Length: 313
Ligand code: GLN
Image (cartoon, rainbow, N blue to C red; front, side, top):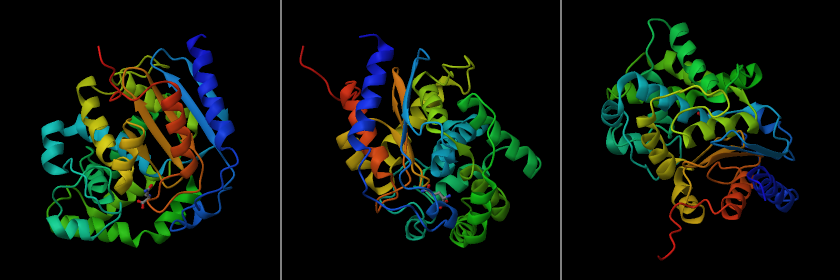
């Protein structure tokens, strides 16, 4: 079978198998997310050679939410370097919910990572720019470079989240009080909220994941988006903290670095091979899309993608 056909049959197999799954519930702490059609289910895969496969609602727009943390981390790494990110944000799993205040209190804002909200907001505060508009242009620009197209903020989600994100503002101010935030806390929280509200499709996210699989070079546009030396840093945080406090279970089952968002998207990276993205709004207790997890697990197994699955000589 050609590679394209192999990809397409793995993606179709996952879509068919989990089309009828109805577990999980839409996230409702952001009111706009609660309104999404829970039946939406899309999958996309992009190889490092640019070959593509997709199934279902792969071209439906939804908000990127926490998957944006991956690309803002990439931007922060480019801005200050990997040793500074390790020192200023951290790279340790907290073992707590993504928006835990306890996690901040226990370590005075240290020993975080860029994928829980305190560390993510700290990463956003590292983005360079004299004005808020300049910082936003950088954040948007890196997402667009990874996706290979222009992206827009979903204004309904942005407004809904802005109206209800007292908790993220509290997290930012608390981090600031521990000197673990590097820019104005409320401006930074607003930038963070905007990045979470970017509209993407599963097809976009698969290109973004494939760019990480391909040493930071977008396999569709051919553009080197970030220095390849930062890719293993990003993938390490995805492996240890990409699915929040269920990251260990995920790695145990699937073996691929991944990142989820409460909008229902998940990306996973098969290093050197391909990126996968799946999307379906209903999420589990930890905030990870139920069907997206199952779909990616199925595809990774079908394509033998687990890099820990060694065979004896
Ligand atoms: N914007 C959401 C928040 O900050 C993102 C959470 C998520 O996707 N887990 O709370």
